[in-house]
Amino acid sequence: MEFDYVIAGGGSAGCVLAARLSEDPSVSVCLIEAGGAGRDFLIRAPAMVAAMVSGRPKINNWALFTEPQPGLNGRRGFQPRGRALGGSSAINAMLYIRGHPSDYDDWANGGAEGWDWANCLPWFLRTEGNARGASDWHGADGPLQVGDQRQPRAITQAFIDACEGLQIPRNADFNGPEQEGAGLYQVTQFHQGPRKGERCSAAAAWLHPAMMRPNLSVITRARAERIMMDGNRATGLVFRRRGRRLQARARHEVIVASGAFGSPRLLMLSGIGPADELRAHGLDVVHELPGVGQNLQDHLDYVMSYRSRRTDVVGLNPAGLARLIRAGLDWRRTGEGLFASPMAEGAAFLKSDPALDRPDLQLHFVVGIVDDHLRRIHLANGYSCHVCVLRPHSRGHVGLRDANPASPPRIDPGYLSDPRDLGLMAKGARMMEAIMESPALAPWRGKRFYPHNGSDTALETDIRNRADTIYHPVGTCRMGRDPLAVVDPQLRVHGLTGLRVVDASVMPRLIGGNTNAPTMMIAERAASFIRQTEKAALSST
Image 1 (spheres, rainbow, N blue to C red):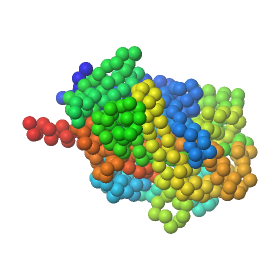
Image 2: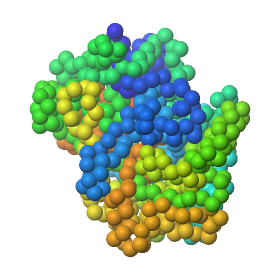
Image 3: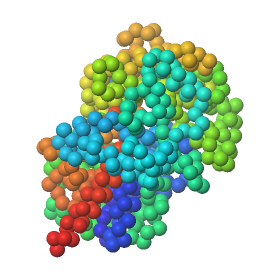
């Protein structure tokens, strides 16, 4: 098989790339994805994220684990990652957040020239079909449907009231001119048409409509094993499907879009990465790039959960399950109700110090009990709130376990390895606790799970005992110009030709918020870069 472009990975970035590149009928595109088609009911129904995120069983989810984390008292963290077309946009909470504009200025100032906010905003607008319509801050014509939650729970409004009672301003648009405040998340969800109320994953937005094109080949249930190289040029991809090892050759480029864990892993399996790491697993060093797999950053998350005295929340007891079934039937008819909820309905972006120029803490308010990624089930009605440090100082890395392409990557996020992160997390937890214990939530507030004696030591111990990811790993193939950068600002792998990396792994630093929207923006820009390269090549011949 031979194509102009071969894309390894059908996640959020890969779906955007395949759809945009195949808009040109003169080029052929092949997308190779390890998971399924991304069309099943569990993906389409927003509330069914609860059935996938735990990885029990592994439905549309790689369900990875970290190395034991000293900062978390030796625990292994759990890392859900999407395994279907759409990637993690198929199993996330659909929250549409771009981060703070200054995050992108930081990228540009750190060596990723051209990735400042002024240059990124137009690409965010290009992705977005926002129900609020076009404005300086939003796009209305993009493929990704973004809308307001239609029927948030009463407890979520009480959470916002609680924040306001503590002098946290209301914010109707976290992607507008000001990020600080409390309000409702906008969601990546169909807000019009026959699919109203369904999840709008990257696959549903970009790829599925493009799959009728004759110049686009999408191969699912296929695991990428190695990038084919001819000297310093990438020429294709070796992949395994149904027990057979196959090849997809690329006339122009191979694009790695396998995520913050999968992309460095595939590069290293192909002999591209830190020489010591490659040799330790018996792999030939095709091209030494010491930054591959380094610079891993993630949002560590600490949760407070409560039993609810009222039943207008999610519960997994018999009465609660009956309500969920009725809600599912209503959703099938109307596209609304509890089944359309992202569950993480409420948001707050907070400053730990009023003197800061941007929020450094984020809260997710959830209308159910979340304990260990729903791996520990409580039958009671309840609710939860999460806090994460938006720009952690801790850094980790991704490596190989061995040279077997079927083995999972070795993930070491280095959580709380920098002591500044624990101090800020504890401060955020105190702010969150004040909201959760406020009068506005009193009608719902029952017994708190995992209470402690209130001391600073007890709080820090609880953080180390229970905190884990909120699913935003980035940075392991970061862009820049320094010796540890993996790709240049056009996302071309340093020192090689015909090879790019396009996904969250190229982010130099974590942004101040959820990472799905920025990943899709990156892919939109990358498609433009690739088309420009092709035009330049044609004009020179």
